[in-house]
Image (tube, rainbow, N blue to C red):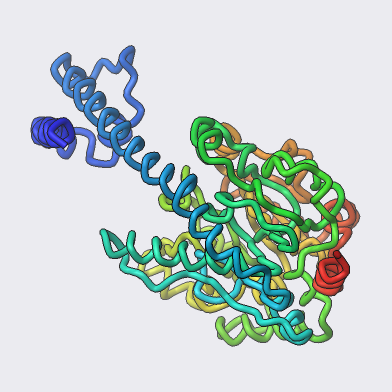
Length: 462
């Protein structure tokens, strides 16, 4: 504790020394970037020798603090992963497996996510006792938050030891501390169709994801009995991400996509968006649905680089522009009050009110970047444009399972001017065959019956 206090005091002192320099010369944000990316050989001529010395000293202190924090986190995780959760599981497992208990687990959402919902309902109809272990109501920070999650994970581990089926759509650390006992199925449905940007073990030592030491010390994705995917073409990518072996990866479809085949579903989606966006007045809907940026889920953000004034001037006679952001980011359009008022019947934001399924059903054109929603949208075989203004940076930080330029089923643009041109060009030159081939390769098992196939497969296993 003495070392930690000393380091904190030293860091605080250095912050004061740099405060005037940071705020007046380069600003807080830039100063943070300089410190986090500090290079001893940095040749910046604008920095004085004293400033470079202060930055070097502060960087060293920051790194020391980070190492102390990391080791404390690892010690806590060591206890939970290798001692406490296994002890809780072992004790609860003595009661045996409840053949009618199905758990639906996700700590990101308060309700059962869309890729679980249809399976939840079907198993319930078949007489299973379905329980949702979703996002807990805990304090936002501090010791109360830690206690809340400690109890939440303990409860999960007890139920895990007794359940017949467990369904997941995300990474869930407590699951990986215990192998399922005979008779239990741990099912990974994942939250996205297809395979696009890398995740899991595929991101070892990349800017996005955990480092190799963390993966080796605390193995993840290692306790699944079944992984269901959208097509045979993506089996290799899931094996690379999970290190689970191809024999448990089954291309039976993505349950969430079944609703796109329900009669009247497309019309429902259009009606919902028209209700949220009064003033569409028969114009075509352009849906802008980018994924988040950032090197972790906690630090997610999205850049606002579009020229909305140009979009309004060039497109508002035939189109409306609807924004649907990723759930991890809450920021809407970056509009000036004047533009927001003048373009009020052209620019809309439905990020909070509309589901992504409704938005996709309503869209005549989708503009995305690296989001897996393009797989679901390909089922409708409509135009897609890829606004990849930071492609090189994204490849360096996270990368993809396939070469981006050859993979995406639509034109790639990097600024608003070329985006406008691509949208207008779609009116005459949309390549439907290209989207169809994409759909056939990556979504071949998504035919409206994925839920039924998955449930029947699981119930048939002895």
